[in-house]
Length: 386
Image 1 (spheres, rainbow, N blue to C red):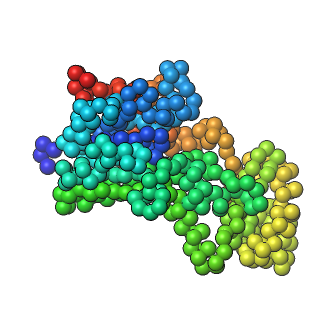
Image 2 (cartoon, rainbow, N blue to C red; image 1 turned 30 degrees about the vertical axis):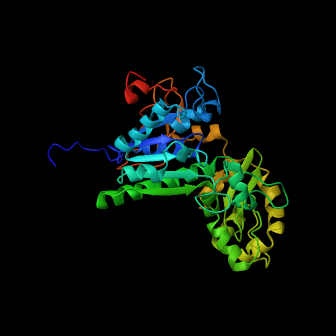
Image 3 (cartoon, helix red, strand yellow; image 1 turned 90 degrees about the horizontal axis):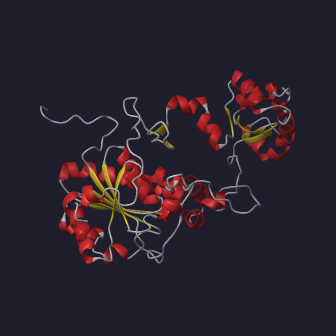
């Protein structure tokens, strides 16, 4: 259409304004995704200390934190003192008149106290899309409880299927519940934006850490329901598949995935034991899994004799999938990572940050701005009299 500004494919949300009343990981992660997709995100923080994440992770020479940059780039930042009625009313008006989307993860009861809850704001602006990101959801005996990622990995059952059987519970090493909930919020918000484009009506989107944690157990819950027993933790492996796990080599661990008969035959050849597939213990995937301890007793000492690269090359030659267990710096320097350009840098000496795992017409959303300093955009957003 003549005169209409063209929106880049990698910024499909250009023209959408998001207000983030969030802290820590989940809501900021959701808002980062929206900002990376082109939305104008205004992050609201309390004066003085700001978001708790400003104190997390590595502290850079300028006093900013690595965690905060990872979660809050692509945003403009303002401070609002919600204990001040004038400031509180300003934010309410801003959300009603200027925002397309509000995302919040304040403690239960706080947004209602300040008149910033979804019912209040959507009644005043029916086009507004309002996203609640809570701990346990909006109903039930725990709806008013606060929560954090490790609590939800435990309570939602994820820790019960993570790690090795008979050992202490293990938390997944990243904030998978927080960030996963942020992703669910984005999915809900995008669906609501599509609906609004057709109907002109916004809505309230609800997501929670607990629901995300339980949802990751979709396969485990289905199996437990069918069998009537809890899944056993598999370490680096997977239930019902063998060999399909990490094995120690002379310089680290290598995941080997050879769970069907053809792959196992090729693996046996590579390891110098073509007779293994004919043994009754190992002649089918089911039998290999049933006798996994016996199988691993044979595999482990052989694999320990050579490096990861040695075995990886040999396995690649015959089409057996494998992957080294890489440390973070190894992954960052890996040629595949570099080729994808998923690690982004805003300036020559700027912090390197992980980009979005999405591309549009072959182009990944770029890193446009680093996370704001506390209140950096007060004048720009709120006016010079702030």
